[in-house]
Amino acid sequence: MFSRGPGSDSAPPKPSSMPNMSPSVAAAPPAAQSSVSPFESAAGGNGTSVIGTDLTIMGQKITIISQNKLTIDGDVHGDIHGRQVVIGEEGSVIGTVNAETIEVHGGVKGAIRAATVTLHPTAQVEGDVTHKTLAISEGAQFDGRVRRAKDAAELKPNLDVSGFETIRMKALTNGS
Image (cartoon, rainbow, N blue to C red; front, top):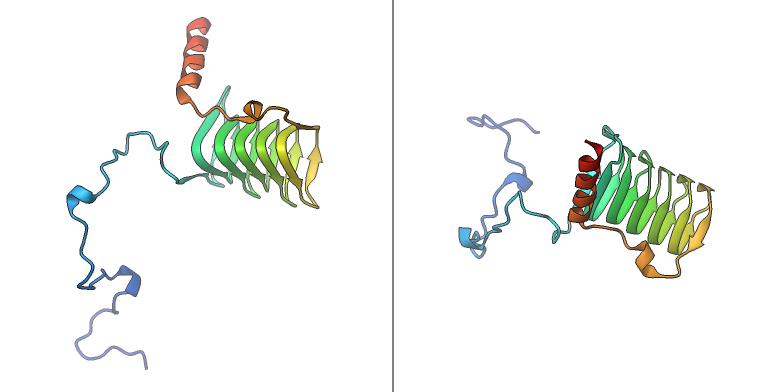
């Protein structure tokens, strides 16, 4: 029933790997393609960065800054700043997590600061939460204090890399 016919040496290509042969669709000319360098800042993009389950980030005064969405499935010993941070069920953070929106499915040991914080049923949080909106699902484990921010500015994450670079350079200069 699925045997090859005479002269057929290979299986037919999968539909997803076949180019679009529609005569009404033409490839975009090279001038219309993106000219963004891989070395330029991705601040305007809408991608997702992932710290996978096989990755552990450790060090003194580590700060991770994400201009877009950051999903943490591995372990981070340091501070996180981002627009949207999702800590997966296998993910953990020891440090401060500061973002516009934070979803916790895994573990956090440290402060959480965001306009919107959601602790899902598998969340394990040990630390204070400062928020504008907070949702704690049944089953979530939380040990700490909760404070509603009076001013939205105190929840705004610092996404300016140059500000952190200035702080780092001062620390290096003073330490030598």
